[in-house]
Image (cartoon, rainbow, N blue to C red; front, top):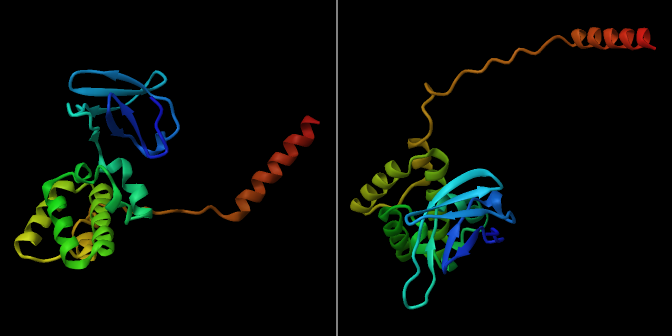
Length: 188
């Protein structure tokens, strides 16, 4: 299967998303009852859960928000027109919050906030914790505060390693260059 410019491929009337780095590549797909194994040449890439098309002839979608979040960051309003928008949300809390945002702040702001939430879940690996926080916000009838959530899910300063960079003296480079020139002259 070839990954299209939309970041996915169609197999047996089911659209599957793939990581954007695979756009334009020809993938080999091993089809199983419950999953698809994707290969680039002989190299195993990833496993996707298998989807089934509806009997009525309509297409189905197997979507992973991690595969399309980079594109959505550039154009958040694209979220409104996505055919597979309902399958994009990783948990019900995200879907419900998007609906509440549409009602309260309008399409443009709802799309921007929702894409920011999905990007935060992707970047920080906090999908479950963020969904729990969104459920709490829904119970309290609050809109999400992206800046506060960003701080809440930021890495702990204790977990960030201290990096000390020691720059060599510039004279050592001169010495290295002089040694190279002497070696080249001796070889000639």
